[in-house]
Image 1: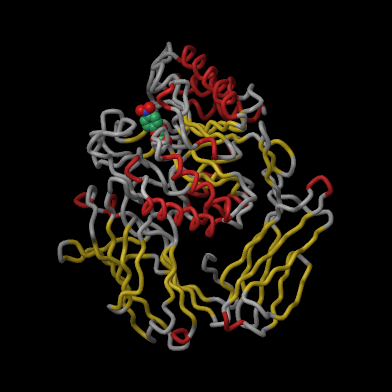
Image 2: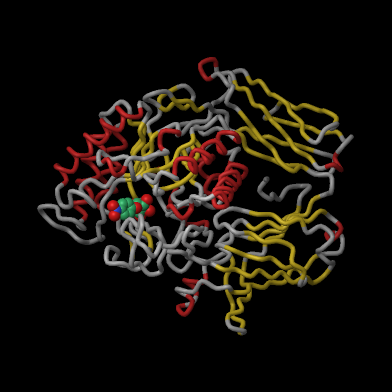
Length: 563
Ligand SMILES: O=C(O)[C@H]1O[C@@H](Oc2ccc([N+](=O)[O-])cc2)[C@H](O)[C@@H](O)[C@@H]1O
């Protein structure tokens, strides 16, 4: 699926602004994008369903065009009505969906209505803590009872767009540069274009940089290869993008292409044939008042801070972020581990229906993000109950689904299991390309004892490598620090404790030749459900929620500039 684009042949209508929200039969203003939980105190813990409404005015000539209604993300379940006719529905958050409304948009006034529900469900998405308290990783008793550690915000959280194009149009583009040869500076860019039936017989132009190819459209799928001598390879130091322009007589699409290769062996991860070590963070897309609503200044600020701190990567924990994050990552040379919206998965998810939904989510994430050079890995889940026997088939299927769609990138799942404790034996991790684990030595275990914790961490890593013989990526580690709390000797929750734990952990892990990355949890403080471990926020942020540095930020900036 292509992100809607405004260009000389496509027209984009943006509905961003103040919509109306009906709650218990009464209307009130609501901002889109945004989350209702933060805009109204009385809706803070409400799951809906609530009805959103807005008016679209459409000029006569546009009403004859092909019209695509594009929801960048709605959390979570929704039904969409155009002029009181139901036109679509969607049941997963954080991923876009499109509805063909050609012929349904009238000239003049149109009413768009969206009924949105954000219900936590045991065995569903978003996941609710099971009553039995199975695999609740400390969330049992949390309110709201989300089976994950961030606030379950509801609403139309990302832009809603209407794209008008000709009926003869470009449906999808797939770019693959994996056959390039970086040592020879030889770029191979395979371009696959899908067009609508109406484009048949037309002339198409495909232009990459200065090279243009012309062809006649005789099939709905068109494939071309560009070979570039002396290509500039995309990498964090030189995130060079080549503009790719696909043109039909009455449609066009422009996509930025980064030429790069990704590979891995038993110990290392390579970008353009050279080993790459991932330095960065897990993070969240959330902010006070905005909730999980798309907000551009925060993205620019976060990338500026990632550069400032000398990081080269982040994970979109625990769901795909707004597409603009990836556009910025492409442009600025930041690598991204793109994670599916699968967090808090328990044994209650391990059934054929839910597996089908999860496979679909993985496919939709890849369909959306496949062309971003910054995306270096797909993560199919975070911290599932993967020591349960039924996890094996479930995650093997997710691995295979991702691989079938894209065999050019490593596919991973992020596990909190597979520690030296036999009871945590992960039954699914063996299927994945890189072993990704979250570890909290010196925090949840070995509380207050950093040095002892690190000894245990080292044994854990050595055993893990011995068992898997694959690269290991520590996707989470860290400690809460409440900004302004200081203590000597360092004590849990002080800035000193967090700084010492993070520095010592990185120094230990960077010595291991089978470790390909260390991501600190987390980039910034973020809001969670209420429970005794969380004073309003999760305070593991290296930055505060409003993006000011804690002590550890300065430590990381120095550590990461040295290597
Ligand atoms: O806890 C954290 O700060 C972070 O760690 C991970 O979740 C855990 C929660 C509890 C325990 N435990 O009790 O051992 C271990 C891990 C999650 O991936 C992340 O979303 C969360 O914010």
